[in-house]
Image (cartoon, each protein chain N blue to C red):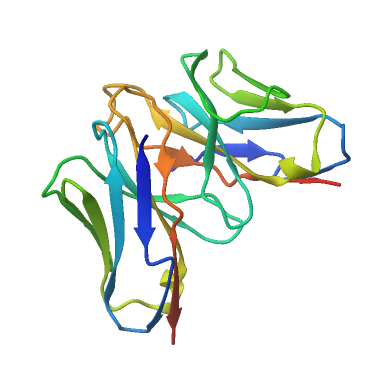
Length: 111
Length: 117
């Protein structure tokens, strides 16, 4: 059974204090690892798709990396507006398949 | 850029009533997914459609049904509503195969918040 585990469950950072969120996964053939940001009561906002080990993608203060067993979302010098829940999800080998989500990491950035 | 549109955004129903949620995917997206998210939970997959045919089925109750129409919009029909159906319902869409190189990426709508009293 496909599983996605995110850690920590919650993270509180001071503004400017860089950190990383972890997403470990077990899936029978990975067809994409996805990071989303979700604000309370809103839909998940797409951040990154990673396909193969060693791949890295960046967007503003965020950088996502992928290994064969886990992915990291690095947040550099975060700001209060980065506060949100960050969700990791995996897709399975056959196309057009549903995503399996982790429970998310709730990030709070304090000014 | 155009996003996924969902309606209504909020819905209040009584137990045993029915509800219909609508989803309009991003233009040229041919796959639609429905997810349910309870308070403090991660999104759980319900059902998906590719080119108007059901492509996958998750933990969707028998009381729920869905379809995708010729214009690719989708509707989730929920009958005999129960208190436990109160949740956020998201629709997501993904691009047509061969159009972007990231066809697996799903883009989510703003959701419909359903409250069953």
